[in-house]
Image (cartoon, rainbow, N blue to C red; front, side):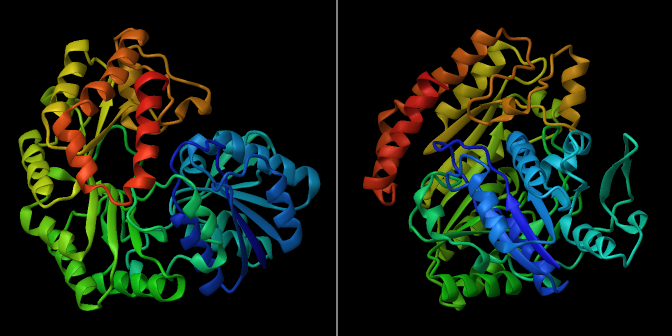
Length: 463
């Protein structure tokens, strides 16, 4: 079959984007393992309407369409699917990714999306294609959600793929990489223009109340050898100079991380490494930081979220704050541009507690930081926690945009939460030592500094 995959994306030209690694992995699986012809269209590089998608789809002439979407992109997912159905009513459309997994009912509610593949996509999507050609019954397709006579039906889930080394590398050959180098990338700061995103594992055993369960709670890492083979291919075929790692949990097994670093060096791969997510601070150690720096790490992020042990326990993260602050100091000493993320406005959080989190960030040796309002995504314990404490939950998925969100599930007045968030950026960055640290370590300063300043202005005064 001819399968056309689309990454839906809301048009926010000022916010960061990243290669759709999950959908590129699915594309490789359907092509290299299941034998289908696959086309690919990513809306992230500033595609503002469905028209370019329809033109690419018409040129490819698929037998089936697949749309990947996060919840922030739900509106666009529906718009694109509706446009495709209007143009080709008989063309089957399946959707997958975070939003269809979390909200299958919404995904299928408007009639233009025929099938939702929930959770891990490879096995379910391949089985659905077999169903569409009559090889198996619909009931035999794992991870499938459909509407039948107005009722949502969900098939049983397939077992998680245990050996990720058996999967092909993400199909970067299906897309033009150049447009991605002209838009803001995840992590904002970059060292080399040509980059790719890589996931070295799936799943996370921690149970943070705000986090998804899309890839399960069992940690499934790829072998360091398999990861290095992909990195080598990216360098040789696409002249990649920087890797952005996008694991939910990269450093659960520190010995594996150190081995990966050693193999990168032994392979002679001249790469810059960035970690905008995936590093848990209170399990990191200096030996691993040193190994990562030796392999090319120039920037990393530690997700602190809140300074309060009470709130750490409430949200199930249970981060050891003292250990995180220590590893921030260590990482800073190795010259890494160390980033921290903080969440403001948890259920039951007071003004004093929110300000204590900002105080912690300002005392730290972090080079950069981001402060976000708490967002209760569906099917997370945070939703139940917010309801339990009387919060009003959003019904408009456009509200879930990370930077501009006005969601408030805390007891603080909305105006107060907004003031705390904006003033956090002013306090954090108007520190002469921190500014000097950023300026002296920043790669490509003539390109990165103007963008960082623009982001700071938006977040301090407008967002």
